Image 1 (tube, rainbow, N blue to C red):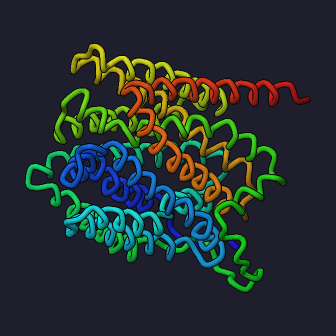
Image 2 (cartoon, rainbow, N blue to C red):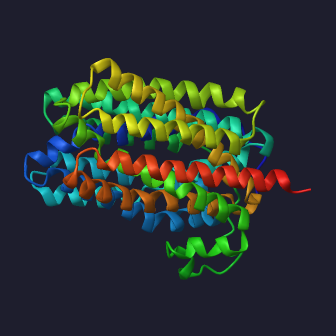
Amino acid sequence: MLRTNFRSPFPVLLLATFIDLVGIGILQPVLPFLVARYTQMHMALYVGIITALFAFCEFLSAPALGLLSDRYGRRPVLLLSMVGSALGYLLLGFGNTLWLLFLGRIIDGLTAGNISTIFAYVADITPPGERAKRYGIIGGAIGLGFIVGPAIGGFAARLGLSAPMYLAAALCLFNFGWAYFALPETIVPHPAHRPFRWPEINPMAAFKGLQSNRALRSLLIASVFHFIAFAQLQGNITVYFKEVLSWDTTQMGMIFLMVGIADLATQGFLVGRLHAYSDEKRLAVMGISIAGIMYLLIASLQWRHTMGAVYVIYLVYAFGKGLFEPSMSALVSQAANDREQGKAQGTYQSLQSLTRVIGPVTAALLYGIYKGLPYLVCAVLTFVSAALFTMLRRQAGSKP
């Protein structure tokens, strides 16, 4: 099923991933200020709902897009997602009402199949023993793109809150044009190989396959607590920065830029070297344990903080998160055979999308009770995840 007579498209994928995540990151520091134009009283709740709505739509569509990429090819799914993102950002820029913010995120979310398909693409072109390293490099591009994006968005917002949205749409359209001409297909599509069954695109049906894949099921159960915690942080941190630290979009963009550099260094360079001395489960435990401690320190910023302390805490958090993500992607890849990489990565992304539905809304509700409460809960969830990964590693070590 796989093609072997093409040039390695990995550099193309790397840049496409970076551009795509820059577009997503541009919105992050701007969203609280966009929402604040229409409501002040419930700003945190609306930011959480809009963030969760994008993830919910991504959750609905990810299994279908993963399956379609296995059946009809990676390339058309990637191109479709790029066009959908561009349209979503244009609606955010053109819109002058709150409901258009919702519509823009719905359209973008329904076509947001880039990452799961890209990971499946990498699995297509990479020997199993080298996947962890390449996933680390892709993870670095994701981290850098997502964090450089907020820096760009923060500065672009000086020209108006719509300016970052137009810039994000332009980047997505450039990404589409470049990938259209430079990205080859990695599989020979076989749409008639097996009848297309609509239940397979049910987002919950993606998890039914876990019954026959115990290794993948155990990994996802262990990781779900970490991803809920991360989703809570991601969905609420800009509101926290705006209201507790009184930061503007530029200040938010700068700290995310610094975190992006740390994420790039960790995932793009450090993980590949540490992989030679430690297994993926140990790196996962190290990473999320570090993140858990940082959540406690983030909660403490409301009482006393300095600019330097905020930067140090967030940089160390990025280091911990950067250790975990490529290790987890490699473990997911190892738990699936070559013909199910798209489905496995789609299920993995579906899980993350589901936690990004739960996390932002939960964080908004907790934030309404006590501003530091979301991050205290994040710490507890992350330590639970670390304990579960430790158990998995011990179980694997005890097998003959």
